[in-house]
Length: 262
Image (cartoon, rainbow, N blue to C red; front, side, top):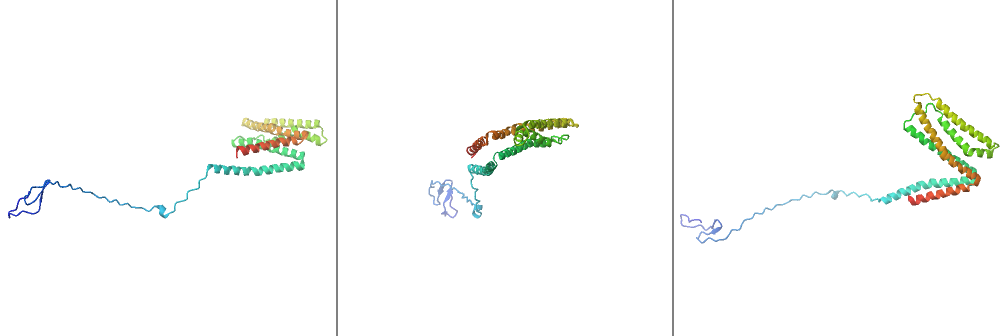
């Protein structure tokens, strides 16, 4: 409580004592509880908005979605176009050749096929040996000549002697003798060439040469030997017995490609 001052007058301002409020007139203090003062701190959050790049720069256009099936279809069609042209040209050329030349044109075509098959199959082995670092045949420089001599001998032994005897005055016995002579020459040639090798690396040269000889004779046996029966069949029974099986093979391969790949 606040006491009166010396002048006997009391202040008119109420005083605060604890939890009570008293007046200066001496009234009973009121039991009014002063409300608690709660200070609320207001926090202002300032959000700074940065203009996005999309507001000034247009967003890039996403790439078009390409399905794997569409890509596969395009590659298949490209492969089909690549194969169709050469196939049509080859079949058309073969038809014209057989139409205007007959069996003679067919014999020439088979001979050309045999030549290219023999050249391709032997070059595979030769390229492999050259890339693997095999030694060169220093003492057998005539290998290329021997290779084509073997080819001529095989052609003479299969269809050449029959064709020559039918179209010339030479008898079959004479052609058999010529064929035997060519085979003997090829054998003696190879043996003499091997005997003339005098080199510290003779063993490696023998191995390389015999590998090439084996590849040449394998090609002659399985490529030239089997295809020579085409000529014999065409000569004895006619072209129909060659063209019909060949047509069946073409149709079978074409349908297998259409239904298996496309």
